[in-house]
Image (cartoon, rainbow, N blue to C red):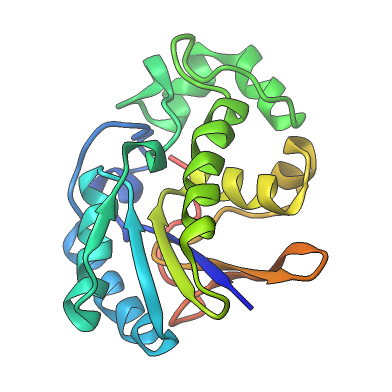
Length: 211
């Protein structure tokens, strides 16, 4: 069985401060680096054969922690970036709610609205993420395991698309991945299934926000 582990990056200062990052680039915080090192120790035992990462620094830093233990080359791909949240980038959640109440209300209802007027919908993210996933899977051997290092909202978008969950189902039923936690997709004869969600080295590491 082929497996793909979808791994969210470690904590950043923006995560800790409740700031929407989107595609703003930032490195891991000291705590994020600790999270990445701990998670990498666990993932290094999984026999990973391919390691992909978003090209944004916070994901790349996280992937580097696993590469250092396994000797794998990190394959960067900008299509694995977080959802672009347009004018929300750099704003706090409180500021976004105050300035864009109608859009926030639509998202709370499970609607896939454009983020920050000039940003993306989750459907847009799924198109680019799924393209990377399909290219990856086409190159995996029968029992290979790959790790895809990405972001909170992007990870949920990909997993939902792969297992056939609608946007509304995924957003109203799956909590966001914690920092440095991962989801495990396993290929069965009937297709891909979600075998595990929000797996990590501790029960309560990091933020659950998709920012």
